[in-house]
Image 1 (tube, rainbow over the protein chains, first blue to last red):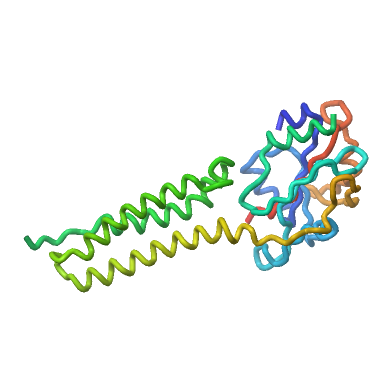
Image 2: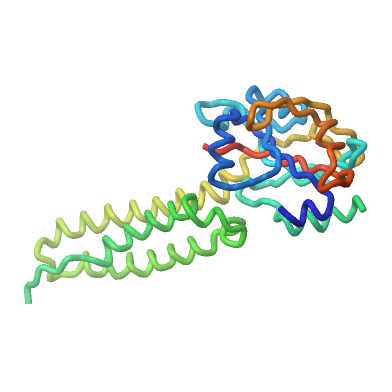
Length: 101
Length: 152
């Protein structure tokens, strides 16, 4: 996480989890960047990332995706994994962050 | 020789199959090197295969105390062990790909939609704020939006 700070990149995690569920995750994982709750998947829907009924109790959740966004709000890099067990590694993302220098 | 030998390879195979499958979700999923491709679990399943072959040989041997019963139990446990392997392969390699196309997601060069959401402390945070609040005293070079499935 220190390397993201050094690169001037702010990670922000977003899911359909409630703040309570997220607090439990943060307690065990120790992340220090913002974790936002999109309980009704409204923002997720706006980003066309809805994975319908794939969540606990059949609720809509986000499919995994990462967007590197510059200060003007423009997307500079996107990762839409085709298998949700495979994720972008921090080192790969920091590499892409050079696009923003 | 008519010895009642406990078919340990058969039951070890079954137990190991359960461990090989569930250890992925409980443990190996935390490390990218064993998560992105389940090397560790496939190796464990290889060991399951070896034990299973030993167990089948033993279970179908002529000098079992109860040859028919032994064949039935050996067959059932073997099929279940293979089913556990098949289930694992399905969930990782096929189920993991059941994702929506998301063709409408923001592309490179597009502006991302604005939003204001609650953080884990219930405080409202806007995209604008995330893009402008300084990091270690300096303006941010960018924000990495990480959409994830959730923790449950």
